[in-house]
Amino acid sequence: MNQNLEEKLRELGYELPTPPAAVGNYVPVVRTGNLLVTSGQLPFVGREIVFAGKLGAELHEQQGADAAKICVVNALAQLKSAIGDLRNITQIVRLEGYVHSADGFQNQPQVLNGASELLVELFGDAGRHTRVALGIHEMPLNAAVQISLWAEVA
Amino acid sequence: MNQNLEEKLRELGYELPTPPAAVGNYVPVVRTGNLLVTSGQLPFVGREIVFAGKLGAELHEQQGADAAKICVVNALAQLKSAIGDLRNITQIVRLEGYVHSADGFQNQPQVLNGASELLVELFGDAGRHTRVALGIHEMPLNAAVQISLWAEVA
Amino acid sequence: MNQNLEEKLRELGYELPTPPAAVGNYVPVVRTGNLLVTSGQLPFVGREIVFAGKLGAELHEQQGADAAKICVVNALAQLKSAIGDLRNITQIVRLEGYVHSADGFQNQPQVLNGASELLVELFGDAGRHTRVALGIHEMPLNAAVQISLWAEVA
Image 1 (cartoon, rainbow over the protein chains, first blue to last red):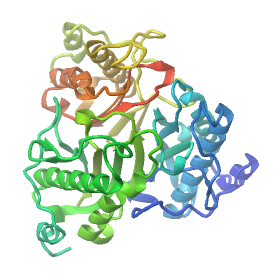
Image 2 (cartoon, rainbow over the protein chains, first blue to last red):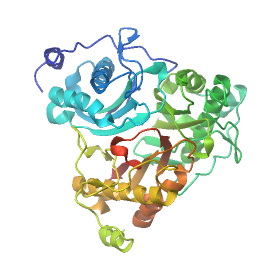
Image 3 (cartoon, rainbow over the protein chains, first blue to last red):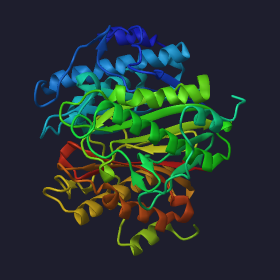
């Protein structure tokens, strides 16, 4: 946990972005006690949704997995904006994974596994989180995935 | 935050109702530590669901927005029943917005924005919450919207 | 609350199983402060999903209700693995009930009521929880129901 987590993320191929703005009249992250919760994060790169459509129709599983990782990186950027340094996170508590799914697509776990792994690679045991994985009918901005994180800080 | 929040709500056109009963064997609100969480609130006025159907089919966006505001008002009534005075709320932590959506309807954020704004108008900065917005396939009682609130108390 | 809760569960016809493994790179339960949260639990008995399909299509309401109870029993097994004795639970805070629903199926509350009742029968007032009930489009492993529990410990 001593290494700079953003360097580690860079080695894994990701750069913490400027945290994406909220798509409405709400805020991207709130702290209550030792808990932080993010709003649902979409696969934004800059101002563009880079994976739009439904898994099992316009998008295949690997694209969904890439979208999920981008959502998690955006969630980490939101958490950092709230606490300054990601090393203040003592536990990733929960990942809520909402996967935009065409009729019959049931590989939500596979879409989310890379995102879950990314958290464990970054945070070690503190990255081992609980998860809910759902196949969602319709999604804001036609996004492929939406992810919300709950994290504990010291 | 000194004004009576129910008066303010009245000026905005809403009256805190008798909190709706649960639709099953559960309770409408639970407190744990400084957190309150409500059950999913439906657009009940009295015992009637006033907006039933799917957004993008039977209902248009403005009707969905009205439904969302009613859900939030019902959630506030539940919170009040638990803590006596809404001024004890120090932060609205999270709004989970579930929008009953027909194929292709993706304006969940627009449906929820009025509800989010209502919270900010009422509570000021303490009303600025995180949000998850999902397009849901089927909804209990065919309700147009379901909203759950998480709030922090002192 | 003094009776052994597992005996009580046995009288109700259920046996706490070995907690099911996670379906991916995450953990089944995390504790943060006095809160425990489980991952979404599926109707596993051993390594088999015993209720697969959509409510309102392949499955009728009673099958969904049975699936929901199995999910809750699995969630209790996860909670026990984290805290040793279910009597350490002071409150079931929240049940998130995701019901795999065919077009037009809106009896999610009926599917979940038996699961909610089971918690109240086991824990008494401490089992009275908040609930979110949603009709979900597609589900991992084609499971009929997915349930996540939040619980408070002393």
